[in-house]
Structure formats: structure tokens, C-alpha cells
Length: 375
Image (cartoon, rainbow, N blue to C red; front, side):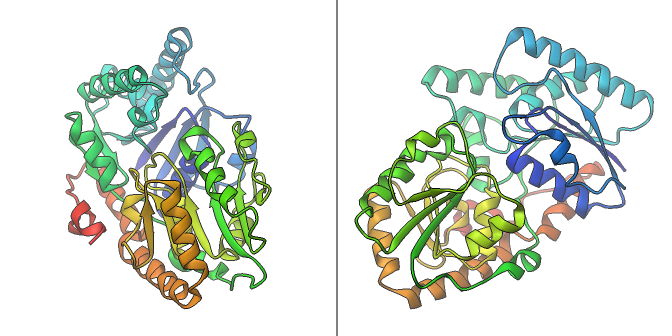
């Protein structure tokens, strides 16, 4: 099959997701139409991560993340020309749209071009990220309008699916997955000198660095505690506590090593799709302490492989409990690996996408129902 991927923001988790699709569907041809976040990673560096045998790249020059009528109009016509050319060359069996901007523009373009096999993966509901009630309202209306253009909406966690159902959008869920056996090869014992709490990702409002900082601040006088943020971003100035180390962007191998050397994985995100960094922490047998938010809550079996929290005080209490009970942490880490292998296996994930690309109708798996995830 010939699968066209469209992503206006080709960085972070979307790169991981598309790369996994390319690697796990090696018999298919993947054409990746992409924008660029040069301030995060250049597209030249990203392209080097892909095997070129079954992947080719097409720059979407006018694509950008923020809403701008003038620039988005240019992005629409550029994508229209790209997909029209690929259709004429018989290079499209399925179009997979990644993230909200691509989802809206791409579904409209596909409708106009008569391309019917269209999949849209939001990778985090955009109407949860707005900085005001108005912006969230606007994103909801855009999602509803885009839904009317057609295509199959595929959420990557049950809680994300619930949010779409609340605004009248039907979807199916295919959990993100990772190769657990490959990642677990980085597993190593945490250092006994420090109790390390780690997180990974861009330092932006969605990840709530202010909350991460307030939790770390409580432990500033406890010299045994060390907080590590793997990554970088525009809101790094919010991480002021002296016991926080910001590593900057690291290779995949180094990220795995840093997570493996930690005692606990902490996420303070306001919302997620289904975060790859937490999946990696599960594979590396780490207990996870996550905000009770969309995407995060699907990864925790309460008191077995970790805990959810709503306020920073709850997180502080849990970290103190973890610190004082190393044997409990070891057991929770084993449960993390078991839960991950059962529910977030990469082979199952991409077999389901293969079915979708082939035009087949699929339903949610039973184990993906929200009631079972936190059982």
C-alpha cells in the first residue's frame, strides 16, 4: 500500500509515532508530507532517523502550528497541490493526518479531491490545550467542522476518546504502542546515592512545568532528592527550584538511560494523547506518578504500577511514601512492565492501523475500554 502521512508539526511524539509506523509496516510505501519546528529539531536531522527504503519526504513549506487565516490559506492550497499530484501519480491508498491543524486542512483537501480513505489522529485533543474558554470553544467548533468533512477519527487513548464523544464526535481508539522488548534492554538499577524523579518532553504549558517546579520545591532541602527534566522548551524559566536538572534534548538512547537510572517517572501534564515517554517508563519498569488527566489516566492501574494525583500536595505525599519503601517501588516497577506489555504492544497497535489503511472497519478492543484500564 501507499500511505501518505501529513503532519504540520513534525517533531516530538508525532515523529516517534510516524517512525514506528514506517518501521513496523516495512512492506508499505510511506510518503511523509511535513512542516518543520526548526526551534526544536531541523527536518534534516529528523529525516536521518528514518530508513529511506520505504519512506520519502515532501516539505509542506507554508504549514505552521498557530492559527493564521493568511498562512493557513497558503497551507491549504499547498497541501491541495501536493495531494492532487500524488493522487494523479496513483500514490495514495490511504491518507493519515497527524495532529489538529493537519486534521482540519487535510480532511477538507481530501474531501475536495475525492480521497475517501482518510484517518485522523489528533495526538491530544486540541480543545483541551487552549489558554482560555474562548480558544477551547473555537477548537471544539473546528473539530466538529472537520468531522463533517469525513474521515475516521482515531484517538490514542480511551480518555481522549471520551473527550471527543462529549462534543459529539465518534471515534475509535488504537492505543499507542512501543517495542517493549527492545526498550527494556536499557533497564538498569537506579543509583543508590540519589532518589531521582524524572520527566521527559518539551517544557511548555501543556506539560505544566510550574506544577513540576512546585513539587520539586518542597524537596529542595532534602539533599537525597533530585528532579530531572529531559528536554527543553520556551517555559524552562519556570523551573527555578535548585534541585531540578534540565538536560536539554538528548538522543533516544540517552533518554532511555536517564529514565532507567531514575526511581520514579513523574508527569505533571495538563493533558496528553497517550505519552510515549510514559510508555517507555513502563517498559523500563518504573513506577509512574501522573496527573489525573486525559491520556495519563489510561496508563495507571492505581496502587499497582503507580498513582494519579490532582494537586501537588498529593504528589509530595506519594513521593515520600515511595522514598520510604524501596521494595514497594520494585514491585510497582514489575507491574508497570506487565501492564505495558499487555495493553500497549507495538505489534498489536500497527496491525490495527494496517487494517485501517486497507479500508477495513475495526472496533475498540475490549481491553481499551476506560472502565478496564484503571480496574
